[in-house]
Image 1 (tube, helix red, strand yellow):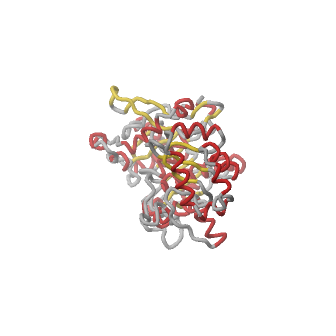
Image 2 (cartoon, one colour):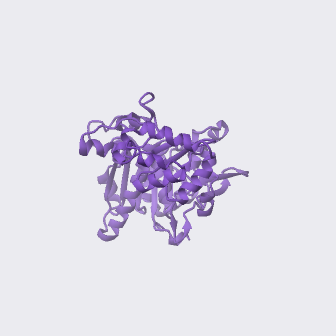
Image 3 (cartoon, one colour):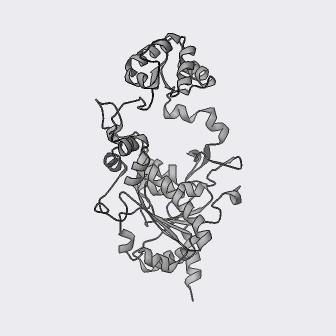
Length: 392
């Protein structure tokens, strides 16, 4: 289905490292773009040396790299070297997108400002992802995911009043920044089809994180109410949070009145419906702890999977709380083709399993067609092409 993917025929030059940028270009690759990683000779993407297996890190194919770079190509270029700069500019001339996540101004300082890039290729879509954006008093500050989580207020609402602030257990700010960048690049390409002109995109991880915080931000902006950490409870409704079945935790989100009524009927506690503490939404929120105790008592006589099936079938959102290994074994993911098995780079006896992005196009999952590249694996392909173009 390669030629059916929305970005088929689009070439992306990817100068990014570690996660936010590579996650962005991975989304573009899944959507059909040809992604060419421009990597520093001998070192490459910093993620090549990150992961739980030291042997893979030494071989420059660390788990962090493998997770986000399937289906891409790798060419080593030193942008301070005259010959490699010529190759890079030839590639720029034929590219649709240039993506980078250096600290603000780095690419400009080595001679590739937006004005220069636009002059080389007026149709180029240039996207810069950084912690704070290319402007403002914090533009030069270094930023990793945890720094952004802290500055955005995200950590202040994660955990309980006793444990907050806590870092979210995965690099959510990197991921959100990458997703917004991919969305904006796709929009810019659509706009270019109309105008014929490229654009400069400036993506701030701080701002994209704040934008994604939903009610935690809007309750304050609209009503002046600052959010507080509530652990596994949902501030907007009750009962809505984590409960305890006979064999483990269970999420239930009975956010609507009819869902609460159905829940009480199924757990055989219809008496809760006539208790003035729980009769309507705001009262349930005020008496959340007491309501949770009553529900937990009723849930403890059956395992979580039974409650999940029974409640879900009746229209009450409910599901077990799984580990990552358990989640990866869900039949739902298998049916939709979310995971793909690829040849492991440099090891034919091992299989690499990677994720998709949860999108089906005409009923087919978007999957990488090739494993992540070894460092410089495609040097001959792209450097030869550049030499042919630039030779008199």
